[in-house]
Amino acid sequence: MHEKSLGALQVYQNALELSELGWKIYLRLPQEIKFGMGNQFIRFLDSIGANIAEGYGRFHYRDKVKFYYNARGSLWESKHWVLLLFKRDFIDRETFENFLNLLNRSGKQLNGFIARTGGPNDQ
Image 1: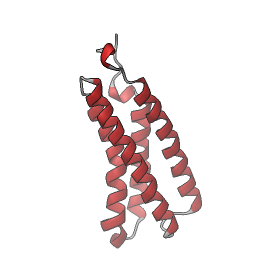
Image 2 (image 1 turned 180 degrees about the vertical axis):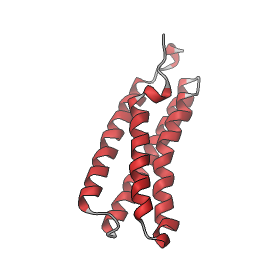
Image 3 (image 1 turned 45 degrees about the vertical axis):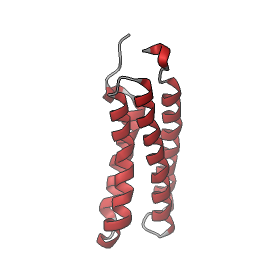
Image 4 (image 1 turned 135 degrees about the vertical axis):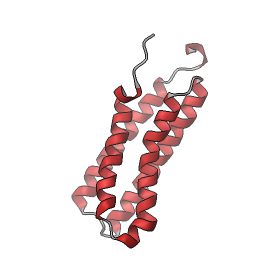
């Protein structure tokens, strides 16, 4: 079996795209918001890709899935932060809806990726 490189995985590429778009939002935030809410927003966005990468590097499927579930949790927390940024008028509706759509699409891909991760018979 020939395994794809991490960078070739669509689920990982989407996580990188989320991080980059999130960074652009973060840079436009007022300094006092960056310190608290902004840092949490970026931390959890970046954690999506970091957990996918760490899981991808693990050998055993249970280790892999554990990190993929962590990535999914970070994705959901990112939804929370982007909603708060919108509700508190730090991002406009279009930015919020586009970002939320990308988060939702990424979540579906991540769920599919988790489902395709092999079980004990695939080792």
